[in-house]
Length: 312
Ligand code: NAD
Image 1 (spheres, protein in one colour):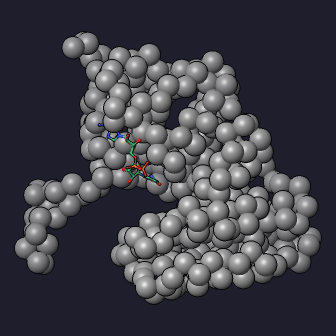
Image 2 (image 1 turned 180 degrees about the horizontal axis):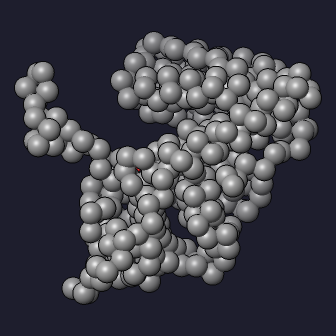
C-alpha cells in the first residue's frame, strides 16, 4: 500500500457552475441567431416506454432546451412500439426542417435493436453522438458530434488544463457511450491515454501514473486515495444509488438511497489536485452539452459559423 499524502485539499470542480456558464453561452448564441437569421434551433426527444429514470431525463432535457430558447419536440411512444413504427418517426424527424437535433432516449425496450434505431438518425442531427458515422469521425480525429458526457468532461478538463498535450490520462470503463469516446477525445487532444475495464488487473498501478483519472465504471467508491498521484485531476462520471440507512426509511418501509460516484470522494479529495463531486459534477454538464450539440448541429445544417462555447 502506498502512503497517502493528506496535506492537500483538492479544488472542487463545480459542474453546476460550469454547466450554467455553458447554458448561458448557448442561450446567448440562440438569441443572436434568432435576431440575425429568424431561425430557431429545435431538439426532438423520443421516449419509448415509461421508464421512470428516462422520464425524468427527457423532461429535464426538454425543459433546458426551452430555457435556452430552442424549440422542443417530445415524442412519447408506448413500450410496445415496433421497430418499423419507431423508424418511421425517426424518418419524419430526419426530414423535418424545424428539427436539428434528434435524441432517442436509451435504454430502449428489449425488443428494439438500439444500434439499428440510432443508426437510422441522420448523423448531422445525431446530438447524442452515438451514430456509427459520428463515432468513426470522432475516432479519426475529424470534426463531428461527440457524445455529451465525454464532451462535458473535456470542457471541464480544458478549463483546468488549457493544454492537455502530453498529459497521461487513465479512463476506467470502456463502454460505447462514456469510456471509449472519452478515450478518443483525450487522444485527439494529444494525451497519452490508458483505458482500463473490468478485466484489467493492475488499475491502481495504472492510476498512479495518471495526471488525469476519469472514472466511468459504475462501481461505488472504486477509486481509492492510494491510487491517485498527488495533484492529479479526478473526474468522476459514476452515478450509483446506494442504500443510506442514515437517511431513514421511505414510505414503503425500504431504506432511503443516496447517489455516489465511482470515486471515494472523502479520501481522494485530500490527494487529488482537482476533483468533481457526485452529484453536482459531470451530471449537469451532460445536458448542457446536449444543448451545445443541438446548437452545433443547427449551425452545420444551416451553414452558419459555430459560436465558441467554451465557458470563460
Ligand atoms: P457500462 O455498464 O456500460 O460500462 C461500465 C464500464 O466499466 C465497462 O467498460 C466495464 O468493463 C467497466 N467496469 C465495470 N466494473 C469495473 C471495475 N471493477 N473496474 C474497472 N472497470 C470496471 O456503464 P456506462 O454507461 O459507461 O456508465 C458508467 C457509469 O457512468 C455509471 O455509473 C453511469 O450511471 C454513469 N453515467 C453518468 C453519466 C453522467 O451524466 N454523469 C452519463 C452516463 C453514465
